[in-house]
Amino acid sequence: MDAPARILVVDDEESIRTLLAFPLRRDGHDVVTVASGTEALEQFERVRPDLVLLDVMLPGMDGVEVCRRLREKSPVPIIMLSARGEESDRIAGLENGADDYVTKPFSVRELRSRVRAALRRAALPAAVTGTAPPIEIADLRVDPDRRRVEVRGEEVELTHLEFELLVTMARAPGRVFTRDMLLEHAWGGAAYRERRTVDVHVLHLREKIERNPKAPEYVITVRGLGYRFRDA
Image (cartoon, rainbow, N blue to C red; front, top):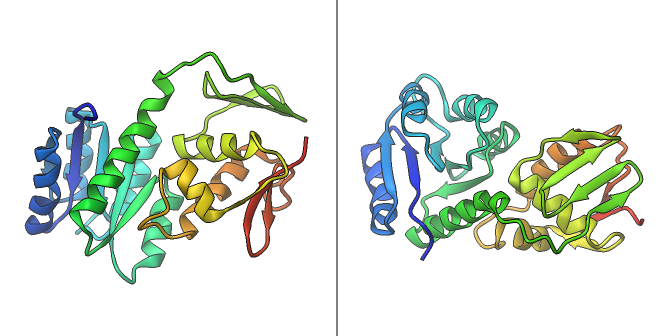
């Protein structure tokens, strides 16, 4: 069983907060629930959660703004909650730093799967194996064990998912990865997830490692299929 975590649940509907909290507490997690974005920011400072479940549609300060403010101060995994049909809101959440999102109505099985995967990804930096040599291509250097990336000699900070996407592709230069393959490698599975999620994170990755994100040198789009990393 995975280690217990502190989880902050943010939703303005009491019934949804109860639905979210019950299975997580049953799994042994310490769950704190709040009903607004302002309260979420306040409780975040007090609780210092290991993961945040954050609804998009909140009164006052919406979930996208809360996500942006949290991401400015912390790399904590953030899973957005959104109603079916709110694709623009979900994409906005991803663009402002969310790691993943769950569409309402959701199953308890799906929720638990997303939470486990996010917590495991967040724990990866602590694991140093000492077995993977650095990957060096042109001006890019990726150290899988230290989870460190340098571009033109300068260290670049990537999120957990950006790093996983980069390492997955850089280890097999020239190989075409479909979006489903990348979801499997970086998110731990393609089930329940939309392929657009990959595109948003690739966009962020390019903004950090490419000279010109609109004309990428490293992460190349393969139309109709997915992405590939440049040949060495």
